Length: 442
Image (cartoon, rainbow, N blue to C red; front, side, top):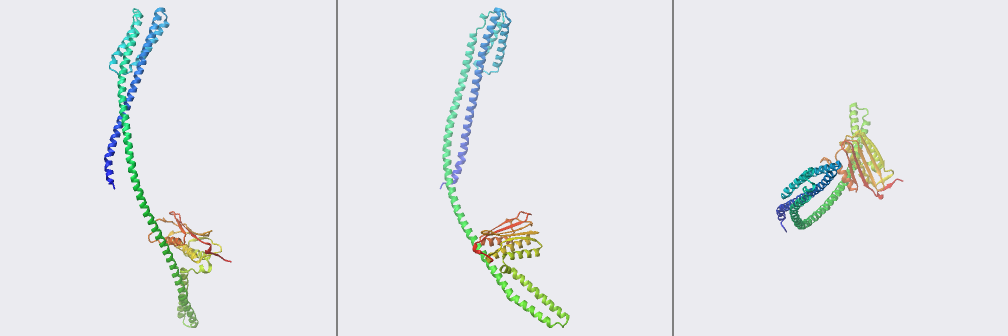
């Protein structure tokens, strides 16, 4: 396998060289561009100066014609035409004065052209010099041609230099394009290799991830089964303790109460203190019997077996409200359906655990319980107006919601908790149900 640092170290050399090559190409390209711009500007100036020189010749010709006509006729109109031509000449020379001569050889030619032009105008204004003897226009045309030849020669030299720069830039573009294609080829090749390695690494990572997901799924299933087993064992143990308390302790307390009642009848004529002690004993036995019944109901709600889920939940709501002074509003829509006893117990325990959490933590003043039997599920919703909490930041010692979640998952359902801070809490449970789990009272 190729050492990856070889590619990295090579890039440390190749990248600066590429930057130098690109900088050189940009320099040559910019240099050729500015030379081209200067040459085009010179060509434009030469053309404009040539036009102005041609205008000078035309205006001189017009001035000469106007002066000949004025000398022949003496008409002021021709004199005015001459002055207009002279003014046009002045404007043209003013525009020509802004021209920057390119060739040093053209400076003397242009100066001589201006001098002969001024001399010709002076001669035309003088009545002593005949028009025919004035500076001929052919001499001025010769000077313009000489000036244009010098300027064209200088512009041609600059054009040659510009073409040379463009040629170098052209070859530079070709060379840089070829180098770019070669670099692109190696880059794509390297990218392809890296992509293959990335895909291979991703495949291995996905394989490991899939294995972990399978393991996590198995662990969750095992935990769910364990939770269901522990819940079942817990309920069985509660039932056993409830039966023992009801059968053994209940019988003992009831027998003791009956014995105390018989003793009381026999001691009706005895001392008052003795009767008071006996009455206290009877009250203590009554309290013990009541406590035993409360413990038995907590361990195994007898109302579920005797009265059904509807009545058991209503009793639970009433007792919770009496014990906590929290108003409870319930809407239980199970109608006359009887659910399989194990599922009834699950629903009862979920509501009981929700009420316990509300009493301990919510600081609520009102609770709403909603239980509905739908087509293929039972929906349970417990809402309060308490302080709320963050479901993702439960204390480590808080197992109420965790136990409810695993209890629901064990039955194939799901649990959601919505609890905005300061806006109360809503716990919603959905438990799937089959038609075989239902029976209806006749």
